[in-house]
Length: 337
Image (tube, rainbow, N blue to C red; front, side, top):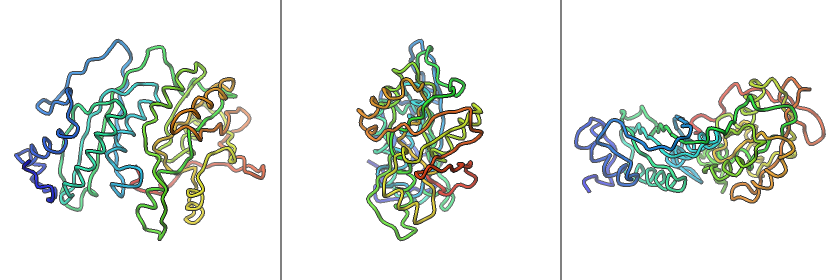
């Protein structure tokens, strides 16, 4: 092992020479290596059955890099896997591009890569290609990750906003706002502390179960912008109104308390392990029971419906009033995912 585990990233680790080769082989390949990962070529050949291929790409930047319930490494795997899963695919392969800031401790980088490897193993995906760049101190916030993912799905499976119709039910697989709140608490900028964990996790078991319902029309993971943003995306795409019931939306007491103190709205906070599903109302109860029988789905709930009688996204309050949910204009939590 040539890398000093007590040392830090230098610009030499990104110059294409010996140190970069050692960094790739002794950190990334050592933990992410598999029979498909080939660092000696610029492209990799992947075997696939005769199904549709889905391709997704995402970037990840978060402060702090490690937070209760996860880190940027597992977040990158789960984020890309989840994007494929909610599109109806089974994720197979990932690429990884790491932009590392000069001065990052190699021991921290290795922890993050180990976490990424564990997440990939649990999700059944392989990291098969990638690239590494090092930027000058002060230019990279520690570490940025960019991932792309390939998955397969049956050609007969159709999920799209165009499939959504009046009367469809809206389901959320668990409490909202856990990730955004956990990251806020980890920053310790507000004098608040707590034991809340991020919900960052793979949603593949949840989406796989939901795909058994032929009345399933659409799925999305409510990451940046939270639940409210997904509702607005549906509203704009379908021109249907969204009627949500506040009392039905699962929300942890810790999240509600932090939001009340800091003035945030949990509807706009990022989730990293939740699924929003739109399904025919006749199958909603059965789908809900299916989710509630799964890990990470115990708190799933039917939270609203699609209607042609509203021209906006509306939240019914506990007292029976109506609150129009506006689109998110400002990002309240930079570097959250």
